[in-house]
Length: 260
Ligand code: NDP
Image (cartoon, rainbow, N blue to C red; front, side, top):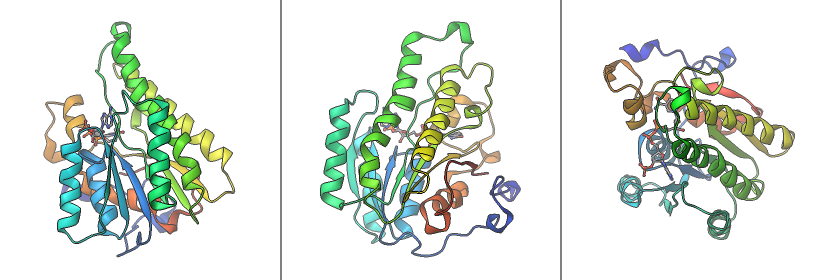
């Protein structure tokens, strides 16, 4: 099985190399996942729910969020909440309202997975469109900043809280034609490091995941011709997603970790 080739994790100490998720390791935790209706975010939400968490499903397309909600309820797991929010159009007030709704309903948040993002388009640098550049920056950077700003106070109310950003291989090494997306992921890693440093020593830890090539809609847009059987599926990369939400990672802060 090609999936055996994924060394996991590549940048962690060897005692975590075979990190395996334990049943109910996320019980009593409330975890918000953005982009929870599709791709990696959908699988992360289902995985967190299966391990005992109450999940808050945030995303743009309500029908996709409802389908994930139905799957979780059909499995007899803790009832999720749905928050429809378009990260491209939302205003600061929308984020403030969203955050106070969560604080009112759940009291605190134990984890936030900032997963939703957009690719824009792959194009030569001199041909990047200003509108697409602005859209990618809005969704991948500004919206992540507003989510973090408004959710951190609710995270700080938890005994221990984990804020997880999503980067990419092109978030630490630029690559030709990846233009605005690569730039936005460098900004994501910078934002993660700023927050991690500010809250060092507190009950909030902040890290980023580089998922690696994973079979989703976004991956198909970037690499339409590749053989999808040769890359990971979202389920394969879940150990790191669980690790960063579990109490096993309490001492980890300011890191970008590779899921494969
Ligand atoms: P998908 O495109 O499959 O899913 C993206 C998710 O983000 C969808 O649920 C989508 O919702 C949501 N989303 C997009 N735009 C908005 C918006 N304006 N408002 C709210 N939600 C929005 O992507 P992946 O699952 O592949 O990617 C997940 C993360 O992993 C991303 O941050 C990506 O950059 C990163 N990544 C992925 C890799 C891969 O190989 N797949 C590799 C490296 C990094 P909707 O469907 O409703 O539009």
